[in-house]
Length: 254
Image 1: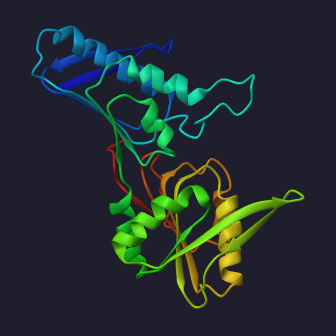
Image 2: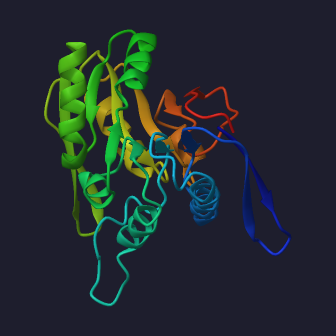
């Protein structure tokens, strides 16, 4: 199935089906405009195929907007992920694939959802570096990183961060002396947390420290990150990065 999207000068988005068939939309999904692109395509497809029950519809989102807002942080604030996922559910896709969601709440809120794992991309980075120790940056990332470490038969070192009087204090729960380390996480908005972790790993004798994140936003702190991380590995789920410091794995043509 093929379609075309037209953007009007006032911001309106409209879609037109060129050739019908099974529908599979693959999109970054990291903006509200992307969500309306999806809705426009699906509405046009539904109008053409209301009586054809044999065709299937699949939505693949590579970097879902609002995925970190997976709860109501304060009583008077909106639950943003709930709003976004409710909008996706109104489109009634047969299958919704999300690449490496920030938490399981995303999958719980989206009907017919399935996680696309980050394992293959971490494996590529792991091999490229030369079989480093994997490092989970916090408790939230530990389960996913542990699963990857088991598949790779790799050593895993957990770490954790707490704030004492506003100052981040990082604990490393394992031996990293003279070892290459690969920090594995889902998303990097900035780079400060990873910078502090890399500095602590090197203080404890790590030979080098690398970073893998699936969703490389780097809205701030990217230059600062270069002071302590030797190289970054990521996908292009959020944006394309043209920098020799970064190795990107292509998940979407954009």
